[in-house]
Length: 86
Image (cartoon, rainbow, N blue to C red; front, side):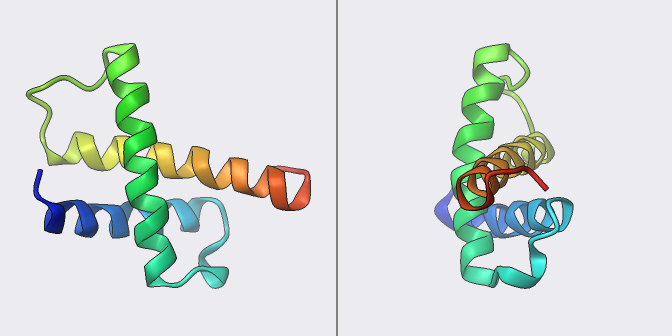
């Protein structure tokens, strides 16, 4: 996947994850993209390890794994910042 598509999918994934984790008001578009791209790395690692993400997966599967990874990342950030998961 190209870097432009990575930034776009990362932004969407970060935004969706921030909505799920109730952090949307505290994050801007830049941090949504950062969280989404890092979440995509986490999600694809988990997806490849479990066999959920294959080489012929479409962009929707990459988006799903990026959202899951971003939710995991935001959960870890919440644990570090506040000592609890929201």
